[in-house]
Image 1 (tube, rainbow, N blue to C red):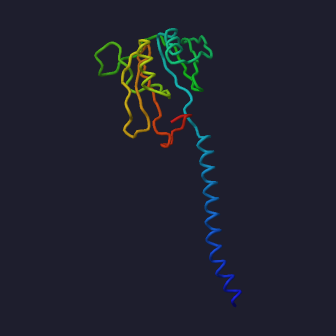
Image 2 (spheres, rainbow, N blue to C red; image 1 turned 90 degrees about the vertical axis):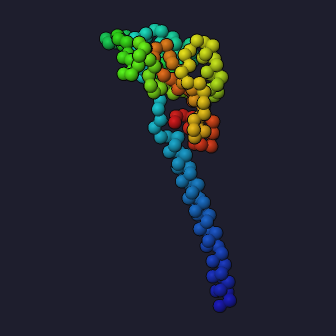
Image 3 (cartoon, one colour; image 1 turned 60 degrees about the vertical axis):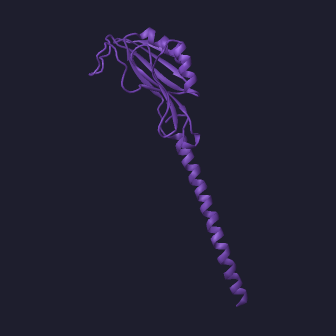
Length: 180
């Protein structure tokens, strides 16, 4: 009986430890699975804008934001260019008319209300200063978002498209460099 009791008492100590080890192993597998899912989940990879100033727009994105021209096509309704920066594709489509101003605008040309493109930059203040020196219109000076995840600014391209510049501030907040 003494041997049985010692075996049972020993089992009572070993079993919870084995259960804890199994839980830790399973949570490690879940973390690995979650990490693999996050790396493979869908993410934004492109945007498209329309402009009547096709050549000027292609050059603007190349000169000011560092996009490179991958290719262009002449189509019946107009031309199309595909530009790339850090794996992000921007499609610029030529249109034969000026985009309509916002309903409540009083000027002939107003920027879009919401950004059409959002670009991750390492230092938003430095990027805004560089773009200001290049003559780019700054619509919103750099400021921290309320949740402290990003520092953002907004600029306007050569037409009326609003572009958001985002600098990640808190790497522990779940920032995914491949997308939002």
